[in-house]
Length: 338
Image (cartoon, rainbow, N blue to C red; front, side, top):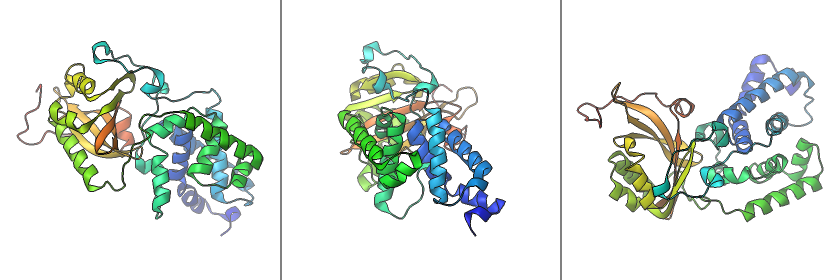
């Protein structure tokens, strides 16, 4: 059946086949999980409404990417850039630590792998896709002008030819190549914390052991055990607070002072931004059991945890990740503060 004669049901199916990869593209462009999903929904609606004008000169996939690019460029006209705490402030010593929130629109947001990484049988392609949604790379993308960002993603992540990108953007191959060169130069100038994170997929045996030890240390709130797992220059962030800490001493010191209420938490493994992570549930002294608190993304390098990023939220992230909004205490379990 040709593109122009697709039935309603057929068109629904064909559009939905591209939802995950389009969400990944829009997420890289926008840095926001919820804005990315809104952009894809807008793309689908526009595709539906204008499908009769689709002449089939390009593939349906290319046409959808053209629509999605225009949607994202429209959303980025205000020049908004999503950031991580270390992109905005200097590291704060523990003795000066204060929890100062900034608006949600400030922050680079987490995203479950399942919503942005389409299935592929090509290991190299899968590795590029994972690396391109990691927090350090996502933060670097935010430093690029919108059209350079689109060119870099299309050329380097999605492996489009320069001629295809030129057609999509309505420009020339020379212009695309120039934009790509400028984008590469900008990224090369930046030293992005977390860029050296090296995580296998699936996790290798040593990485899995490290995560198991981390989970046991965190749930037991054993700061000695946790210190042994952290790199000496490990970073901890906690959006929406702009505070970020460096070094095992300040991180564990924070966890036993300002962060002491996290003692007794439970962790549920998740995959987030191409990295291993956990959904953290804090004890709920009123209802019993455990209540959502944060999604953690862990950066690992050379057998140690180098990045410990906690996205604090009790209403948005857990539904996005398909996680329950309450965990029951196990039989016989004694909860802190209960």
